[in-house]
Image 1 (tube, rainbow, N blue to C red):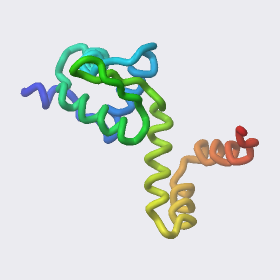
Image 2 (cartoon, rainbow, N blue to C red):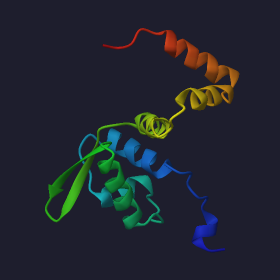
Image 3 (cartoon, helix red, strand yellow):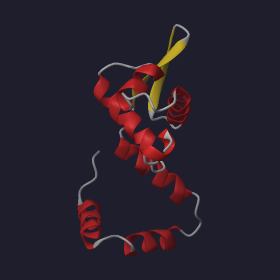
Image 4 (cartoon, helix red, strand yellow):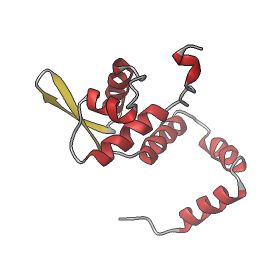
Amino acid sequence: MTPDEARPRRRPGQLGAEILTVLGSAGAPLTPGEVRDRVDPAGVLSYSAVVTTLTRLHERGAVTRERAGRAYRYGALSDPAGLVADRLSRLLSAQSDRASVLRRFVSRLSEQDERLLRDLLREEPDC
């Protein structure tokens, strides 16, 4: 069995969420190497995968990036929930018939999630 077969594949967005969690709990900006060591202490995750994900998170405005010598240090501006919310907003904004998309989305929610969504919609917005 190869190392790739031994570990399960991450879901789309999972590495970004893991990186945001690490950055959010770090207390100070981290280098890609420090991020990799905290996300995957076993060292199976490639450095380039971390750099690519950090770059994409920076382009989306989810992390800060500051030069530190020859490398960058990254800090969290968002959290995993914010990342998913941004992704959902981008997907929705790309559709002309938003009502149909939202109707289908809600129809596929579990009863518990639908109740939660209805409760959230009834809340006063934070201003």
